[in-house]
Length: 332
Image: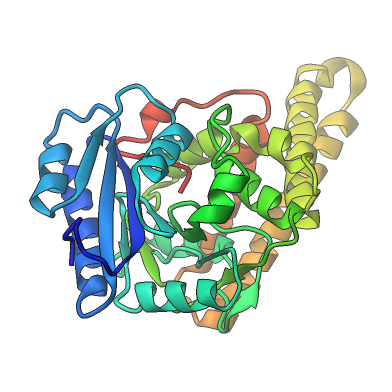
């Protein structure tokens, strides 16, 4: 199955990692389970200077391990792709576990003309209330459908198209997956969301503090990517909402400062704008909650919506650090 000399090699998995040995083991085991009795696959682990034995875990699963300390996640994926031999590239993050039907679905979708295929992550089955509510930020398709964007922690891409567009943009800290999908769509190539490519994201934030820190980092390149062509209404709306939330937060804080001189109305306007953004997000999450019968409590939905929007707003002006994402390896 992992024999590099196999003439049936079709798919190369690219797995970036940094100090995440335990979850990497679970990730690679899930790939091994999905590859049973299937076409030949290889695994390329792009190790970003791990000191916890992540490289040894990769080697124990027969993976090719590249030592790439100090690189951005986009560069890790690109260099992993450059070393891969399959005509299909499977990008899976070290803190993800894929389902047994992942490989078959990816091969079928790309054989039928899609340039890329994947699916939104799912939360851990034993996740916290924050993780269950956080999942409501995602829209899970029930059938195969075209989409504007896929997360780079659970995506298969044809190697030829990936090379033609130059891979991931290595100048980006985050949102490199959004940018990649924009450039695929610019060439009028199809991107499919396929629920059969199931992936559990073990790295979903377990607490509100982790959620805030994570979104403060993930949202840092949101504006920069959202205005690139071809402009996606979904991406532009996301950036616009974050800008409105930031304006509301700033107006609220400024209003509290000038309250003795200007009265309450500046703070009230800011609070109204911020409440509108959070309310809209919570409303959309609650609609999904009813649709999927999510066990996430309503209070958790409101708290996650508030934390998410505030973090995304401040990410436009305050660059969060990737160092707070312990063991993380990408924008997932």
